[in-house]
Length: 481
Image 1 (cartoon, rainbow, N blue to C red):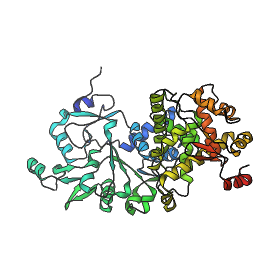
Image 2 (image 1 turned 120 degrees about the vertical axis):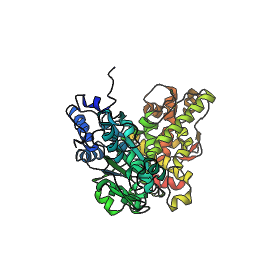
Image 3 (image 1 turned 90 degrees about the vertical axis):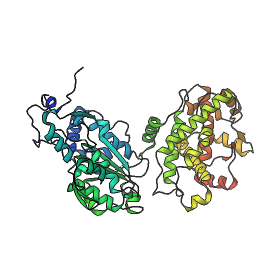
Image 4 (image 1 turned 90 degrees about the horizontal axis):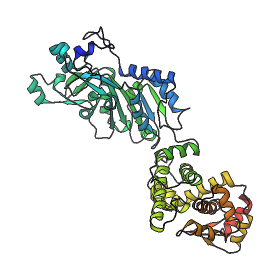
């Protein structure tokens, strides 16, 4: 196994650094490093941001352009739009590891240090300067912006004890206790929810990056850092809760807008990728689509605050809770762990906590809004795939005054046997299920009833399905048939 260089002299004997000398000003900036690795990946056809779905034709091309142009950038988008994941994925465009001066809080280039302490160590040790290798994972520093963040947190503060120990003045950079930004030197520094930073902190950020200087407690400090700065913010916060100061906005190279999945299939792919569920729990395709459609319906619902958005975490959490309920049913009744519509209703806590409601929604209550959204989603999914199915016999049976409670306990075979009382329901369930498995067909039977309820061809009270209410019948005659 090859031993990595541990001193500057050993480093200069390697192929990559051969012929170079200290203070040669041959500086490879982080932006240059990211650009070089991005160029290589583009030419080879390697995936750029694995796990980021739905942005191939929108966000990623804009992001690639910003990186190729060596720009700092900001991602603007509502919650749950993979902004933080994208920022962290940029770390994969850094080199696997780079050499830095050993024994320093601020990572510094052993050949061309930007800090006074690094220059002093290089002059003192020369070719014997000890170095260490910094992996790419440690070159990413992230800070969630809050109003109480100070310049000292991000840039640093004067440390009188350090100044006394070193025998320097308080205005010497060697007397500083470094904050997060200097500790991100030679790497990527990400600020989430940028608009929440106080204006004076934002000024310190752009000042140190563009001009290389900042004042700390009246002492002018100069630090020409090599940092790639990236931001994220909520567009609502951009103009309302907080504000990004104009000079900082002007210095951000690109403003890239993120978005929610544009179609249900994209959302299903994201949810399936992110959701965690027990091995053996089966989620039929029509249930997975129902869960995803719930998020889409909620984003369009007038009772839900559009400015807050409906996070992609909603269908992810809902799928996890619905799968857990199916698992619980399996553990207590030995029923097959196949997710049904009733399991989706059991996941209401995963929905209500992620909806910011308007006044009308608050009056109705989060639970009622969530149930209504599930109903609309079931109707939409059913209509999308099975809207042309003949259900006249089934509707006529309910119109005759019959009610049906879908069995929630026992095995799937018993549920299917009970479903035979409803005309055409077993046949419709077999079509929807596309499977001979009893548990999947039972889930499909309940989905058919829920889909008809969503289309207002049936009514529902708790777990009982019945004929639609009289006023709905009249509406159905004009609109739904």
